[in-house]
Length: 138
Image (cartoon, rainbow, N blue to C red; front, top):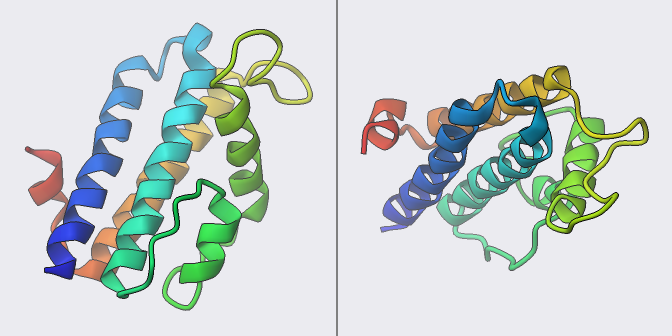
């Protein structure tokens, strides 16, 4: 039962990755790549929490979520998690929000976020013994 719920979280994570794959080369949407990368990582972390029979908090802070799962998965990149946290909140609103200190995320930033989100999802799949093909081909 818990694995089924975890699998649903991972499917949702993959959905965010699929969106990114369609817009990854669109520099004007780099802030949305950051948003969906954050969402994918958050859902992957929550899949692991569910699998561990831990309460899944209704919150979005990747650093706090990572703290809850670090005994099984430590991604060792608090700076990137923190950046995605900031961009996640800010990218949801118009104006000068959703920016890094130097402006909108670059395509290089976006690719880094996407690769990181893919890596986190893959690691969680391995921990849960879920074949990635099961959740990517639906």
